[in-house]
Image (cartoon, rainbow, N blue to C red; front, side, top):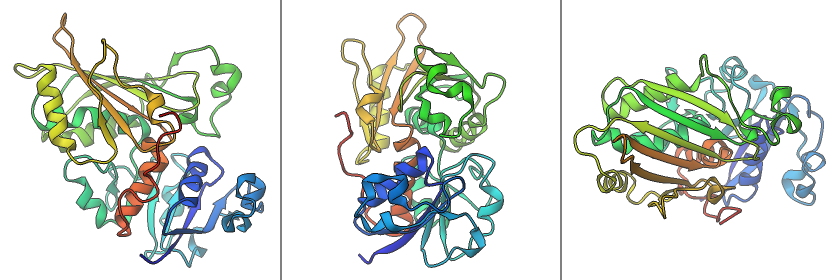
Length: 333
């Protein structure tokens, strides 16, 4: 397959630098443009010393001028939510875009990019403007989608209790997300409102064919990366663990990045199993005391929750093998 030149804007952030790592090892994507703000003017090898001697290391980070970008077939945009809508509208229509940020999820003209949701893969293949899912939604939706698709849980009143590593706040996060503030601490945030709620409700309604309502509480935990989403729902009819796993197996049969993890002595999937990968581990149970269904999703927030998922989408959009550049083992297998 011929080489395609691509670009990354926001290359110095956590998501952008993870994209850089993945693209550097991709068999048919060649990095030809990098954009940034505070790091503009630096060579990539200056910012990322591991690229010394690599052809990409000689690239100089450019100030992001979207209307001037040319010579590439696809642009990854890894910008903070609220910062991509206006500039990406100025990018040439001939350049495909994968927006890793949150400005275009369920926006007209943009395709939602969580590949494994029922029916979504074919939509992604034909997309030129792709909105990557949020990190919390990637873990939560993958866990819940098979159960809603098969009508095993009630679509309203779903509770999602999720924990994320600190990189989920972005490199430019507020000072209360720094090391000293998060080390040896655990706290909930976004309690009044969170932008992922409408995203998740829209995606689940699309899967289940009915209105969904969720109560979502995110937490920050003192680890670098990873998300664990524990989802609770009321069963419809007679739900047991075997039926839950059967629904997930049917939904994700043949999916290269989704792994079902049966409970082992009451323990479920670990975030560490996903670090540095595009994998999602899912576990299911029924609480014996309350009858509530428990669906658990574990991902790397910078992997399936951001950059690796973005690369999976780009592979589909450009006719590459879906697993290209993503087949390696996690960093902590």
